[in-house]
Length: 217
Image (cartoon, rainbow, N blue to C red; front, side, top):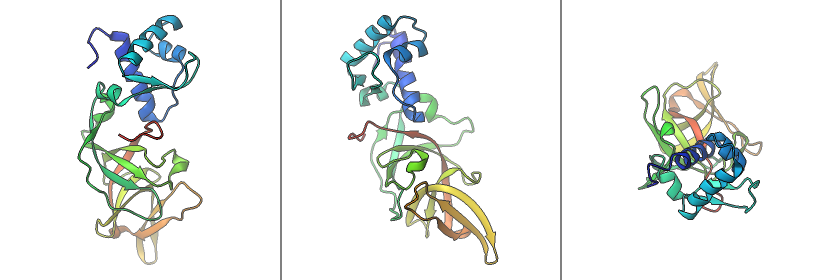
């Protein structure tokens, strides 16, 4: 764990966690320093260097202007944890959730819900939601919600729970009754339209975590 007297360094880690979970780009050293109230880029660089040496962050570029500052797995561990329950398909070929024994670390404020609803993580498989900035290998923070608003990105079980997918939901009514339209965010994939009783909404996606490419937690 990071020592408690590392005030600004802890703030840096938490700020990087919020950016990563919200899909924001990596900051420069100057931007990271300003976000935690440091006016001097030199001071921010010294704090960042200590965090890098301790293994909490990594940088893709040596320049202080380079946008390549990211938390490592060790860095995520100091800002909270959330269970990683399985995989979620984001493609035409749907795949059942497979149990995963483990957890992934997130900023503590992302773990809790103001509504008191449970949150958990699912790892994305496929590219059907790339238009919503959800790509293969990303982690979704899902908040349990059986009745999300139309247009929200949701996790849904289909065909009696044998298949699961992440899509944008729209409810429709036709001559044959009520339907659910699950819309991808990729022009190469078609909408999934099923009778309302065949789609069980498990929750809505509240954050997307983008792990460094080439690495999976």
